[in-house]
Image (tube, rainbow, N blue to C red; front, side):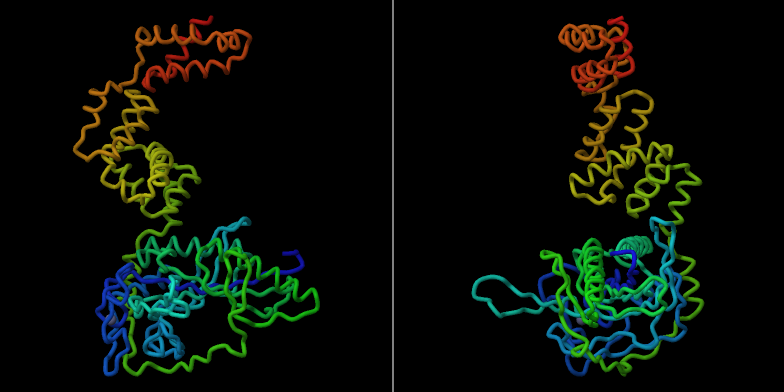
Amino acid sequence: MTPSWETVIGLEVHVQLKTRTKLFCGCVNKYGADPNTLVCPICLGLPGVLPVLNRQAFALAVRAGVALGCDVANLTKFDRKNYYYPDLPKGYQISQYDRPLNRRGRLEIETPSGKKNIGITRIHLEEDAGKLIHPETEGTAGVSFVDLNRAGVPLVEIVSEPDMRSPEEAYAYLTALKEILQYVDVSDCDMEKGSLRCDANVSIRRPGDPKLGVKTEIKNLNSFRAVAKALSYEAARHAQVIESGGKVEQVTLTWDAVAEKTIVLRSKEEAHDYRYFPEPDLVHVQADPAFVAKVREALPERPAARRERYVHELGLPAYDAGVLTGDKELAELFDRLRGEGLAPKIASNWVMKHVLAAMNEKKLHASAFFDKTRRIAEVARKVEAKEVTGQTGGDLFLWILETPESASVDEHVRKQGLAQVSDAGALEAIVKDVIAKSPRIVADIKAGKTTAIQALVGQVMRETKGKANATVARELIEKALH
Ligand SMILES: [Zn+2]
């Protein structure tokens, strides 16, 4: 974007609530079951059935509102949003129109120029639709199937104010939103399972112009990166249209992630008229102020507060605190290691180095390490006490992952002879041998290239399978070459 344009972005995020059952019936709210196995007359919209509001879904929606600083409505109601689509069995979606549960919230994001608050217009409850499946197997051309397992699953729709000014801010907003919703346990926000979906509105205007430009809406964005890319593309397209004398049309678009461009789905003329009207089968709901106060009190610590605490109370570097709190489970793992008596920086080092590497390599969640913390702490203490080397510590960490909690670290170290060798007598022969085998490195060192000593230390470590005390080995090498 040229600096002569300002981008204005607002986001609508749909988030699936972590409930046991659906919003208005007793069907299980679960991902990955066989198609149409989690359905009943209510979520199939058969005649003569009546919806009943799920108390847990309501409580979670209140929790989302409180966590995002919203005013929770005293009185809220449900409305029918009418449209026809094959994945919507009733021909309407039960949503909230003029009396949403939560209004006027905010979310703080990090931008390159500092912290910024993004306004939240509203958070309302609604039910999800089913899913159309378009098979690509032979003989199924033009055939679509529908899976209604998701029909009636509880969602909150979180609508932001048009407060974001760049695709990067939209990305930061989504990251912060996901983090907070995971922390307060409202949703798992797993985009791959469709439990977080985002539509983005974008327009451009001249900086300082109080009037908003014509906006377009991009639907079905399936990753935060796609949101940022689509917004960049779309804002640049608006600028190009206007600068070449044209007018931006108010349209709904979809993002083609392969071609990396937006495609028009429908124009404003075809835009849906949803004919909202009050849902006659559901009563109005009053959120008792005492209930809201209880939800507020029971709210878990928010990531930003936890980050602050890690930095100011535990003395962790801001970088460590950011990485640890970026994943709720990772922060919990860190707390558990501290609970085993490790100093904050040491616990953090083990998480940031060994745990993250293992999580990436083995595709694990941090919770997979929860029942390993006693032994991980034991190994960390051995490294600190120089009973084993850092390298052996790393090997022991991997060994812990492969063995049950009952396997003793002490016994393994003893049986495998993994204790660190600091005894000069035991290392001298190896050092002598290494020096004899490396005349070129020795010549380099004698010529003044002292950094080459590290190469010899490395060889001693290899010879001892990582058990040598590196400091002692270095001293012996220096002494021998003196
Ligand atoms: Zn059902």
